[in-house]
Image (cartoon, rainbow, N blue to C red; front, side, top):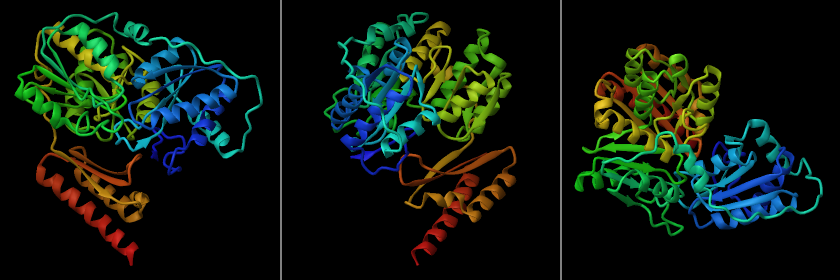
Length: 435
């Protein structure tokens, strides 16, 4: 069982997340100005063991613990806002079931670098948690009744025929609870978790599953979530994927119409397609491009007082709805917009001209090669050639032993040329390391 540190407490520093490590994480929260901790998990078979250890650490440190069992990450995040406390979500998000890890929340926000440092110091034994009287495990309460209040301002009936791929993950409960209030014409796939099938051929990392289902069964729209429910990707009735960037475009244009788009700014990442940026500009909306990772998006949103931002992976933060990413919330909001405008999703993005782009992964443990002077120089040279008519990005995966090369340009041939140039340079460096 791998330790997968999402926005990672120690990132990939630990090969395994053990019971003793989980115990230390739970105990460390005593030092983070909270007297209550809410704990949840996704559907991985290892989650129960990790939660048990975390709860023991919290209780031994004198903290009260509310275990809300299997719930989507956004449900846990919302509950930490309602209860004004911290929370720990045991999940490896879109990764396979063998991986597991934690996300730490404080009143709806992910843990800060300073908070993560405290947790790490407790794990390392550099800081001792003072002895105190044992905490109490609180009586279970169903969080979905409170969570539903996030939808009070826009939840309504739709005549759309909707398919939802739930990735055999944590989003099953809140997705079904909400969408059964939206449509009477629903179908669910990926909703039979067994502990080992989370993200297995289903969910937002396997879009062909929901695309085929939508096309074969003549649905109007399909949504696919990741393993812990904070991401969503969409497909229309023809099977075209509407990724996170396209959803942000739709939301930003809608919010601007309503006079709710602060400073006419949205936050995207350097992975975003240049066609989206150009289309937003035509709507009078400026973009800020950040490094990859929702923590960078959130920082930029705060700096620019933006209400909408996210990643093309489907992690969308819409502060008009909630302060954290929520796949089900964003899916329901998109349905609301379609109903209000009485249109199809493709009608809202028809003016966007998408640049050809491609992502190529190189499997290697030597992820630091992205900082090699030859690679840095090559990327700078290519970007200079492209000017404002494309982009190139070479980065290390934060969760897997991969170097990711992404390129966007006005033609497919140019994209392929860029990918091949960088791939060849990396492969030559790797061969030199093997000698």
